[in-house]
Image (cartoon, rainbow, N blue to C red; front, side, top):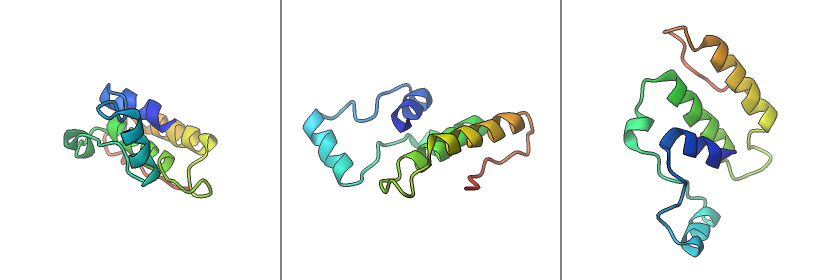
Length: 93
């Protein structure tokens, strides 16, 4: 799920600049794909929603990682509030 969010946000595949073995080593060590700074610092609510969802999906411990149903609920709340200029997306689970 995170890789899909990454592609939608960046228009790139995570780890595409790495050979498979090198990418696997990084992933096993807990490294995350690099997200451009302009996206990380964006004030755009949609970008923020994707960044938060990705952060919750990339958690390595399965017990702590967001479930698909939690991501869906997060997106539903965000979508319901996206036209509100003062809306700040937050994870509540």
